[in-house]
Image (cartoon, rainbow, N blue to C red; front, side):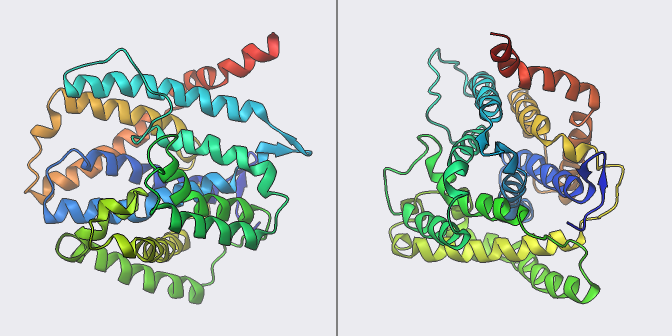
Length: 340
């Protein structure tokens, strides 16, 4: 494949995942703040591409779900198990913030952070079917369904279907890319060709989101188009398609500069799932105890400091001791089933 590996892992993709999970943490730490031009533009620059990239990588490494023609039910069970735990925990942490923790938990409706695990389970279920189909049919079909789904009011946070369909093309793109020669050894000329449009796009988003792009910004959540407003609703599909193009430009630019060799952060990039779950719970508790009320959103230094804090938390939560505990919890249901 062209990337360097250590102990059977891809150093390139682990480096890539470390960058992406840091952006996930940073985005969630910026979310509770009152928006200023500086913080808002950073936030939407991150949100424009970080989850599509993350999902692309998830798709890339999802080929293990079907091995020797057999569906790996244990992989699906583990993801569903983690979703249930994550859903319960966020129910309590979000309840603390809201001032009321209800007794009822709706496991079939999700629009918060656990949505990713629910969507991943649904994408896993489609793999036995799409692996038999032509790549072009699946990719074109997933894009068309995604673009049209935003017009259907019944496609909402039930089963996280709005985001599951909106982000599906990135998952399938990653899945099919694994079966091809994915060359990450970019030549300098190719790297420049990828970096220039990515830099221009990122600069435009950073400078103009607050002033020009705010009416379109919710498209990055995979929302139903009615949330864009009545004037933009008819153009929702076109706006989502434009978002896809922007996401691809930014993603390719980032992929061109990800280190191919092992770094001090490579190992952490192999532990993104535990970071994804735990950082959200910590952020909720920090919000409950008033941490974000102390942040001076009008100070660029405070915002940069919050990004540094996000980086440090990403590193801490990627600790191998946490991994040991997390893996025991993650594999618990499949170990129980195997013994029964």
